[in-house]
Image (cartoon, rainbow, N blue to C red; front, side, top):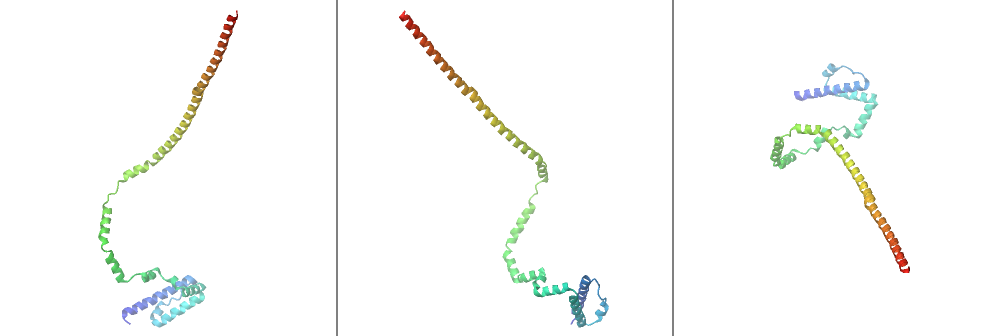
Length: 206
């Protein structure tokens, strides 16, 4: 084992020991035995064995730990990190390279379009600010216009009723008057004619 590999193993053991002590503190409320210096002088196999013993004791003392271990045994996919699942689904280097080569001709046009979008001038905000400020006044004008339309509709109805009454009173009423007067004149004319005939007969008889 090289010196670099040995350092990695020792650092890994220290990290595992720290995590085990942290879990013990969270579950049992105690910081655990402070034997870091002694453990650092022990062999790797002894430290690994001590870690296994400590984990077994935690599982035996904590029902929650036992349930977690059982759940991990039954459903290991739950404890897989998203990064590992993503790495498994990632295509290989050759596939990525072929995709890049295929899409490479479209890169210049995309860059050109993005440059054009960047060069487009932003319209002045003053006009939009004035428009937003005038929205209440425009709403009031629209409301007033709706009220005026209702008033105009009501006036049209009243005008139609007045025109109907005027037609009944003046046009139809005058026609009825003329008809009544014509009937009276005809009756008077008949009476006058009868009186003239009667007088003519009296003159002839006398």
